[in-house]
Image 1 (cartoon, helix red, strand yellow):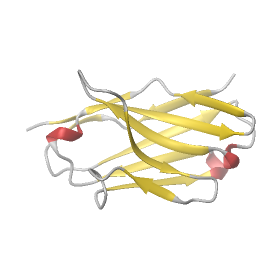
Image 2: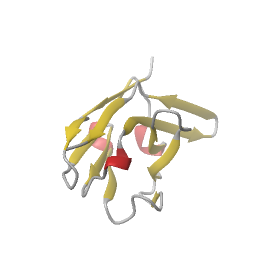
Image 3: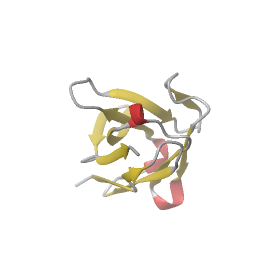
Image 4: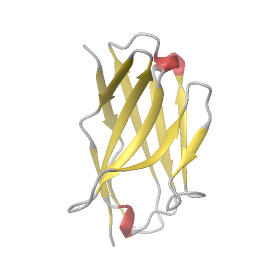
Length: 118
């Protein structure tokens, strides 16, 4: 059974930093998965924040470019999201996603709350 477990969320002041982690268990060949971080704020649709492919190509939502960095450690089956210069509009539940395209499988974590407030 595949599980994605996020950690590192919390309450932070504007301008602060957080580092989210997502550890995958029960997953075979973690390195071939594209990993992503999504977020969902109250009343809004879930949106892609950042993604990293099996070849470590990254892409980011325009709203977080230059502030967030996604990385992965295949030896630890873990993906990270370093979030700097946080803004109140970054407040959301952040979800980890693992995607394999052939055959297609898609896994989600349970989410971790990030709140940016003074």
